[in-house]
Image (cartoon, rainbow, N blue to C red; front, side, top):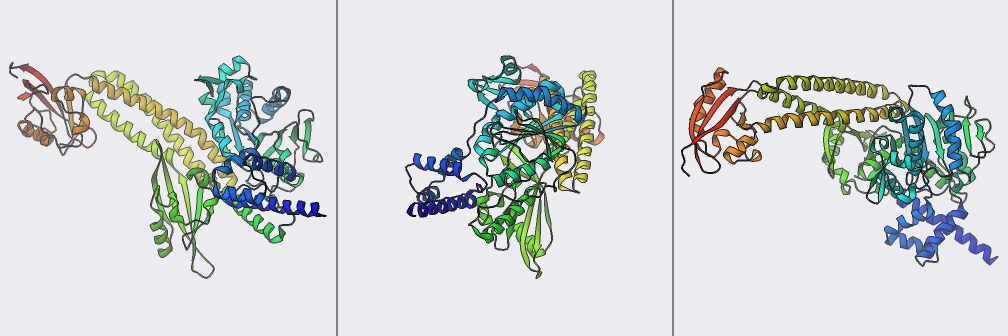
Length: 622
């Protein structure tokens, strides 16, 4: 009897620890098998020399780093490239040809690697489809999602870096084709890497990725109890298209589900979703807590998880702040985008970096609440290291049933690509217009370049219009919005390539201007310096960053600029080239020179003049 009482007490302490992990870090292990879960937790307790669950909870509360060690112990990340070669061979020879035949020649192929750990399985899928379709077609059609709950494993997956030992199962020719050596490690090729998207996802709680052709979840279900496995399979069934394939691990079975799945190979654990809907559509029902926590705890958990599923299905990052300035809701997009966690719920909003960066939100919340109207901030800039992001922010006050302010909902829409594209196009256009007037001697080459740039700009504008149209269509339903965002990722890649082409053209034009030996100075209509080439630097000794946007006639260098004022003013007034001025000056070496100055009107952006200055003979004095 004493032993039974001790077991009951231990079970209660374990459940209390699991509840603490869920509330403190957002990890809900309630669906995991208690035997294996308890064994792993006790192993970690033994490693740190702790005997009781209560003492170990104290250790977690005082040492935040212990959470990571515990999660790594619980979430065993065992994977490799093309793990279980026979199963992958069956997939390549039997499943992939049938999958490609039923998808068609133009449709996108969608694949989900659930529980991807450090990414080897997701990259194996990318290699498999690249070999089956050809690299070019795979880059255009295949999209692979790799998800896991372990953030540390996901960081390794996103890097795409693996030691040579990890790639030993891969044939040398495939390794050389899909990996590049980077020191002592190998990195997955960058173009195909962009077709693999990694993200945090809990298959027991988060909404599943939809419209899949292939779903791979190998040796992950075995860690969950029967109830959790049933609910996960329901979600997988919802995620797959009719005829889509489910690929499980050797340690897992899919029994008593013949009304929804056909067996392709029980030995290799490959199943196919049957046509029709043999069960009720997917409902985001959370995994229930074990009996003993009570109906109240179960109801609160269900309501919270339903709320989280709804929030995570929203198109962008969102959070909510109550009237006391306390964070009450954070969706998955906001956690990923801004580095927030479930533990930030309940904290004062002013303590979070998001409250003042990328824009001061606290005053806007007060204004929106006071005026009872929605406020919008367009193009707010946020810097993360060397990266710059832009967001449209919507601050929406929420009113309770009594007509009093209840909370404020804040949503963030990422407009980085559109903003950068607009600035890049504007910058390139200005550069082209200026260069066209200054480099008439290379007119034939510039015309060819201009045609290519114009074609690129038209393609980018067309793509942008398609993106805007797609976004408008996607506002109807969450499912349509998710599909549209996936299309945008492909178009974003095209924009990046076009932007690189535009940067290269701009660099070419700047190089041509720089290569002119004479001093060329461009003044705007208010006589401020807008361009100062290398010839001007060599002649007068002033660098471009010292003179740009400075009044030309206020600069102190070897040329008496006041002698040019009348000529420049006359040129601006008449818009005709002035007479060549010959002025005695002193160059950067202190030598007296005769400088010839030709003033020409600049009919480019906002007017101004172009001064062409060349050094004449020296009088021989220092």
